[in-house]
Image (cartoon, rainbow, N blue to C red; front, side):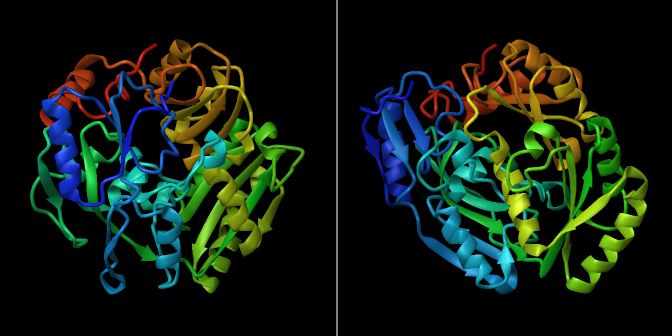
Length: 391
């Protein structure tokens, strides 16, 4: 339960962040770290004495379109960044989701929050995850120490790759005060090929086949009947979708070749640019499952066997990343969901429901996580308990 009465601090400089955390450490206070708070409900916290929001650390430090590099403070809103880069014909390649409708959240997501949670959209299968585009940062550790890592150039090979450590740490290791990310040219156009009526296993085969061609598929998703019936398709049967992006002539040629290759899987239709963008926005935001009261899980699985996860659990699913990310609404116990995911070589995150968001720490990986936490935040000041997990 989030205590809205807890005082919220909104520092405007890195030095103010450092002072807040140094004082918290000295007084044995626990600090909840948030951006805009749109993912605040993911991961239950232990006792919190103060909330630190990075919303007012919202300055654009440097944008070099020619160098494909963008440096900003973590509180910069994603919507503003998308407008800024789009004006120069560029974008963030990892297509970060907002999930505001999915989680029933208020506010506008920030880049710091996206990186802290390592959130990536459908294009991850081709472009990589958020952490792969995270070039450098400045942050304050739980010790109250200001430190830097990485750099402000794309080709940076010096020092430890702490960016991949911070990405996905959910604010438990340090508070980001400045971040540098790589941007890429936005594609001129896109189309989406749709296949209809495929069972999950056949859809997995089709997506796997498409991903192993030279046609550069940038989105591969499968919507079983429940998800396909939602907008924008409102289809009466399962839908499997494959996105192609780039220059017009290239996209047209690749679409024709891919459609010929997939013809044995059945009827194929094509979405034009506008409908394709709308469709992938819906997949990215998992809108088919927004507003449903059932517990919602994100299963990260090997794509070739991704369909097996939901098949081992009753509920409704949606598959992204060619099956590597399976969204599942199910009432099954958390321990069973996590066991099924682990049995397939993956893991599960509960985004909505009574179960702990993160699984319990265990084995060598759990020990390593504990040592990393102790190195950056030995007093347990930052987001206490958020990633500790449970059943």
